[in-house]
Each structure stands twice: as structure tokens, then as C-alpha cells.
Length: 381
Image 1 (cartoon, rainbow, N blue to C red):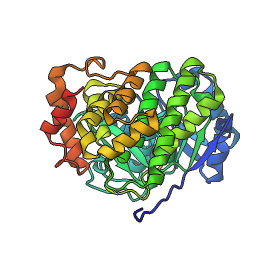
Image 2 (image 1 turned 90 degrees about the horizontal axis):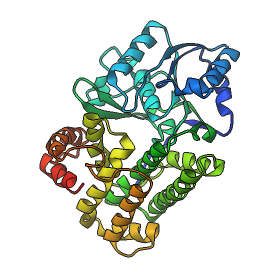
Image 3 (image 1 turned 30 degrees about the vertical axis):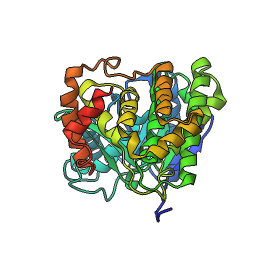
């Protein structure tokens, strides 16, 4: 096991009705004014908005609102939030929604205390050194945004979908009430499951050193996702399954699984960001297309780990069989597993590869993932 630093400053408030205390959690941080960030209005239909506003009012927290955050969040809306935060003397950002809302909130938090263009952080021109505090109330378990410092945003002018990672934008407090996730559609439950698995397997397969303990954590996460997803597809109101799903989603990308590993990277996310940027595919749906294709291309670079995956997850001894069964499970739960089923034309592969190669270069993976290599991978989809 390699040396590492593990620091996660987020406090998670997990359980029923915890969203009704969000005002208290913010007050305890001595914050008096927040920017409330949310999506397209579903929180107003299910009563969550009223509960949050009541809690803010109860504890004397004033607020401004930024709505309209979409799946595959846009830089233009982030900039709207930054402008509002600066003009309205906002002290913290409160995200109420899914991963896209949380990602937007983090970018706003960083940009609100920066004199330049927030996109500088996403293109690695400048490193984040401070940010407004972030709080979240989550309505979807998938991205682990509630317990990490990651944010993914799409530049709607350049069609680049890039990311930041900084402990400065880790949420101070995240509320996770599994009951708030019960209305997620079956499609987005499937996409969430794929995303969690993707977070787990990226380093699992690409690390040059992956301790057995880390592998066992990843395998436990994946098996729990498979089990709970199948329960929830049959009974969306199963609280215990929903709670396990929400908690395991957080463990997949809160810094736990890669601690002590060496050499891992995120090629599936690198490629998928181009699918969602250029074709507005849901992130998890795009990953379901990319992962099996990438695994078929990559397996011989780490065949023993693929054989382990097949054995531990599906009780099979053959690496190819493990990939086949994972792809079949994605299809079984309703995720697309081909470019065609994701409504992406084959003639679009070159454009996707060029776009993805830009991300690969940004992430230091350009030598391994040239345009031609990414085309080769996508041809398998």
C-alpha cells in the first residue's frame, strides 16, 4: 500500500426528515445569507422546497435563489450564480437537488471569491485556494458530490465538459435523506447505478498497484449496487434498499477507494464527458455505453484484475464473461449499452474522439488515449 493523505471535511447528516434541519446546520456555521441553487422545479412539487425555506426562515437565514440548473450543468448558469453571489453579498451556497445542482454550487462557490473567469479552474490555469462554504440537500444518490470536492461543468460555448477537484469546495454539511430519492425514475435509477459502478472500477482496473483491501471495498460497493438496484426497480419505496444505495454511492467517490493505490485514472469518465457534451446524453447512460467497450479494449492490460472482477462479482472465472455479464446487467436495468441505443450515430465517433482527446490531454492521459485509440474504443460500442 502506497503513502497517502486522506482528508474529507464533510459532515453527512443521514436520515429521515434531516432536510428540515438545514437552516440549523447553516446557522451553526455562523452564516446568515445563502444562495439557494436548484434545478427545474421538482423540489417545489414534492414539498422539499417548502421544507427548506421553512427551515431557513426558522433559523434566520436569508436567501437568494438560482433555479434552472440542468442535467449536464452549464457554465453559463454557473456564471449567473457567481454574478448573483457577488452582487448580493452571499456568504454560502446551498444546493438542493442532484449531482448537477451540487456541481454547479461548488463552481459558484469557487468563482464567487475569484476575480477572474471560473473556467480558469476547469482548464488548470489556476488552482482553487478558497471558496464560499457549500451545503447540500441531496435528492439523488449517484455522484457522491455530497461528500467530495469534485465538480463537472460543461462550457456551452466550446462544448467542453471539464472538471475541478478541490477540498475547498467539499460541502460543509450534506443532508442525505433516502426518502427524498424515492421518486427518481427507473431510468435515472439505472443511470445512477452505472455511475456508481463507474466510480468504483476506474481505479480498480487502471491502478498499477491496487491493494486487496481496496479491491474488496470496490467489489462490495458493486455487489451492493446490483442488489439494491434490483430491489428498487421492483419496489421504489423500499427504504432500507434506498438507504444502502444512497450510502454506497457516497463511498464510491469520497476518496476512500483509491487511498493507498497508485497509477489509477478515469478513462471512462474522460470519454463519456464527450457523449454528454455533444449529444446531451445522461451521464450514467453514456457510461453504460462506454464502460463495456472500454473494458473489452483494456482487459489485456490488467487481465488478472479482470479475472478477479468476474469471479468476485459474477462467480465466473473468465474475464470476457465478467465483461459480458456486466454489459448484460446494464441492459437488464434499462441502460443503453450501444451508441445506437443512446441515439448517437456511428459517424459521430470521430467528433467524439477529438473532443474526448482534449479532456485526455487536460487530465494527463493524452499519450495513452489518442484520437485513434478513442475511436478504436468507441467502435466497440
